[in-house]
Length: 333
Image (cartoon, rainbow, N blue to C red; front, side, top):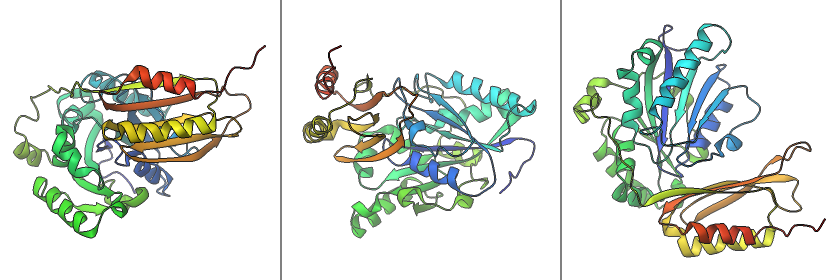
C-alpha cells in the first residue's frame, strides 16, 4: 500500500463520538502487515490521555499526544506546528513515516481539523487529506445524534462510516440506524467494524475526501473557523501512586454506572491494583463498562493510576473523594 501522491503525505482523520471505538480501530490499522510506518497524532479533550497505553506496543510508529485542549478549536495551532515538525524531520531524514493518522477527541467537530489541510500554506505544501473515517457506536448513536452537534458533524463530513457495537442492538434497530446515517450522508459507505476489524485498503489511500463535495454540504467550510463546545460537558482526571483496593474500586464502578451512567459520556483509565502484576485497563461509555489486563508493570517504573472522566455536570469533588477512599491505606513507616 503506497501513497497515491509521492510529493505529499497522505493524512487520515479518524473521528467519532466518545467511546465509538476509534482507538480500537487504530490498533487494528497499526497491527496490519501493510509494511508502512505511520505517524499518529492523538488528541484528548481532557488534561491527560491514556490512549497511548491502549495502542499496540510492539511497533515503532511515531505517536504524539495532544492533551491540552480540543484539536478542532483551542489547539489547532499545535496541530499545525506538529505537522510542520513531522514534515521537516521526514525531509531531513531524522524520522521515517509514510502517512499520518489524526485521532480526534470524541468531542471534536472534524470540519476545522479538515480545514487545516486547505488554508495553511505549509500544511498544504507537505500533506493531502486522504479521507475522514468516522466510527459510530450503534448502541448509543441515536441519542448522541439527537443531543450532540459534534456527532452530527462527524457523520456529515465522513468519507467512510464504520459501525461498532452492532452486536448490542437488534437487526431492526441497526437497519433504522443505517437509514438515518444514509439520510445524513448519502455518499459515505456504511460498514460494520466490530472490535476494530475493517479492511485497511478501504480506509487508507482511498482519495475519498472531496473539497467540492464538502463545500456543497458546508459552503462556509473554508472560512468559518468558529466552534464552541457544550459547556455542560467537562472532564477531570484522578491520579494516584497508591494502588487501589480491588473490591473497593469494583464497588465504585458499580455505583457510578448506576448513579451517573446517563451523564457519563466516556470514562477510561489505567489502574494500579493491589496484588496485580499487570496494569488494569478500563473503558466505559454510559452503562457499558469493561476492564482488561494491560502490560505488566516494569520493575523500574512508577506505578501510577490515571483515570479520565468526561461527562455532563458530574460532581467532580464527590468522584475525587470516593476514588481516594478506594485506595489502600498507606503503610506506616
